Length: 112
Length: 114
Image (cartoon, rainbow over all chains, first blue to last red; front, side, top):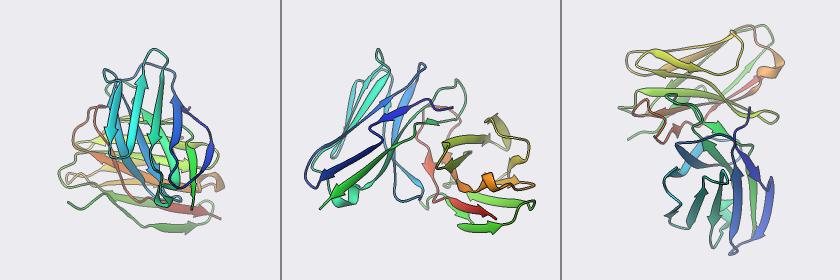
């Protein structure tokens, strides 16, 4: 079962523009993570935000978390062609279990 | 440090066969989790090991099994392969067994069942 739902499923923008992806989840969480995947390869961890945090930055990435709405957003500023990938949010939905529950992902395409 | 490594990277099998995939975690990491990724179901949790013990298991049939060795390396085995087992199998490692840590993923093993 999917805990997170990303929106939109696909996003295509011009290089230099900002890209925003959203994630909604269903149950209480301890943290939420965002991952990137290039063309069916392994996942690369981008950022982890804990349930008591509201916003976190890492380079060109900005993640927000609204636990009252059970939602998170990932903003990539000044996009580059190399940002073309699928982006997944993942939550730790189970106490004591080292398990991530992933959404279906957003396919981001950056056009040169 | 070297990242998570998975072998083999690609595998072709036929229905009914069995397959064993291997995962070597980042040095010092003791927790290893396995995930299956398919276009239809997305990324789904298979199981998680910590200190050679399976701590949690996802909703997969008993044909899917795994184990972890004393050096934290892990293997997963799928017996009696079905066409629907074709997928990218990813393993991830982390230092501790809590759910508050980043998991680091390997490149995956792409399995094709014919």
